[in-house]
Image (cartoon, rainbow, N blue to C red; front, side, top):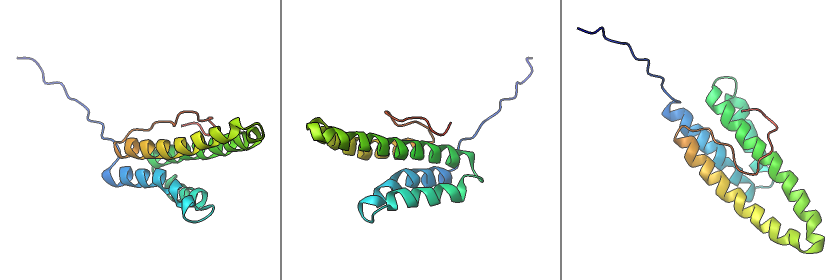
Length: 125
């Protein structure tokens, strides 16, 4: 008879943590309703939970790496709009912002930490 091997089950983030992380990603859209809310709401959400939960902290870093990167890309697009190409790049950046936030929210709800494409890493995840 062979000895029974113990297996360690590593549980992922809880349902509440995954939902909170999903809302953290989606909170970027608050800026479409109230100016600067797309920056302030995710910041407050992240700061409230980052010390309590490493999963929320990592998701907050992903969101803020994107917010800072999108701002930088936006400034570059505005400068390039003087030679017309920037207008198209600004539209593409807006589409990317919406798509990346939705995909990030879906992945966060699945318990996955995934960086957005085109993101400059200011915070290490």
